[in-house]
Image (cartoon, rainbow, N blue to C red; front, side, top):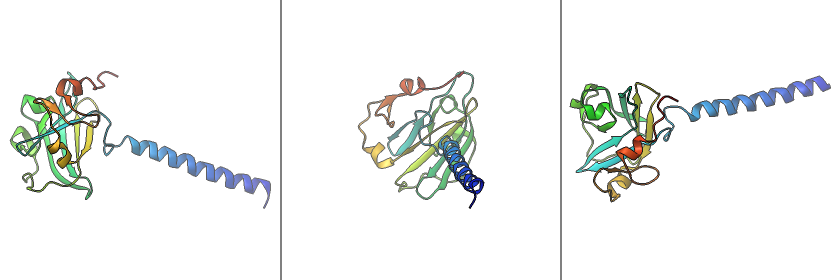
Length: 165
């Protein structure tokens, strides 16, 4: 094997490594990335409410909820009608709060791991993975949400938004 054939092989291997790392970086910021922005979750009387940061010039556009382990969409809603949902406080499976929502009700037994993804009018969105049993067991004060960093209020969650950046 000549030196240029060896160099060609080395360059080919290097190119594969660089492309692989590039694809991983792109995938890191996909909608399935669980913590692009802070998201809060709480369960009160069996109802799941999420809080996501929104910017003043835009609000919520689409909400998607999945069974994370089965990769199955459980509920989707678009164009919130209530001020609360428009500004990031969303009760899941409350279809009447949206112009369009998929059919179905909250299952009696929730999946072990759920993924919520909220797309806003000003950025790609906010998402989180959460375990409903952990959220339900958390002793949250009124107005607080479970986050990956511990309990937080809607105001604390909203301070983590990235408006105009």
